[in-house]
Amino acid sequence: MHYLPPKMVCETKIVAEDHESISGTKKETVIVSSSQMWPSLTGSPPSSPAVPSAPADEGDKNEGVRIREFHPSEQEVVRRIFYEGIMERIPNTAFRGLKDQPFTQLVYGTMAVICFVVTKSLLLTCCLPIFLMGMRYYFSRKVILNYLECALNTDMSDIEKYYMKSPGSCFWVAVLNGDVVGIVAARGNEEDNTVELRRMSVDSKYRGKGIAKALGRKVLEFAVVNNYSSVVLGTTAVKVAAHKLYESLGFEHVGVIEHYALPGMTHSILERMFFQLRYHRYCLQLREE
Image 1 (cartoon, one colour):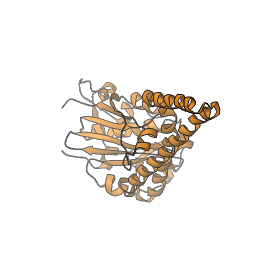
Image 2: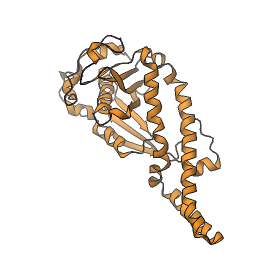
Image 3: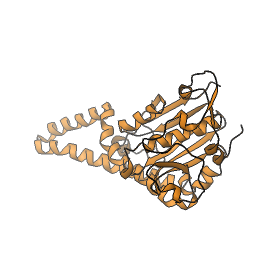
Image 4: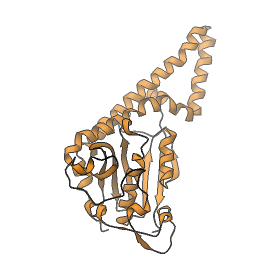
């Protein structure tokens, strides 16, 4: 498979049928620019050619959001955004995630009944949910910190090597007023001709501005230009907003893995009792193989 260099992707017009072609429908082929396929953010300028590799030039210091390629000097700020985004998963997984785990709810409820029957103490029975939630938070923090350590020592330790110099892959940053405020990566798989959307995160102070959607669109443009047949992603996100974002970009939910195992998990009895994770898979079919 022939890959275009990442810089050419920013400068090449995209060959596509129309906006609906991103969902996989086949129609008469016309040439459109990336800004025509996905309208730019409100108040932001349309897509422009790739900027020089300097991390913060005058072109970045404007009121609009610009998506451009990662520069090695941005390694630390990118790692910070990634780290903070993953750390937000701790309370979400510990507390919000429980609503999607009916079996765990049943187990916890049974434990409360047994506690009351054995101790005859209403106070102890009322304290049990607090103890259970505390244990869920402890194990959620423990597992996610182990996952972060793994990620920060693999691809996020050398973004230039893992993404910018790897064929069929790329890493972008979102820049607002000269500051890096969001990140996303694309990792190609030549075996099944798919590209994976990875590591998407936006600084919490800059959310609600459409930055995540702009980052997602950049990966879709990259996939179209490089003739990938589909874009895939996996997420353990609990927030509904994250899933709505993927659907708004055209992704379809294609499956869920219950009790998903993250790198760094020990699979102890206590860990299995107090930490459960659902892994959602999404796919956007660009064309039939």
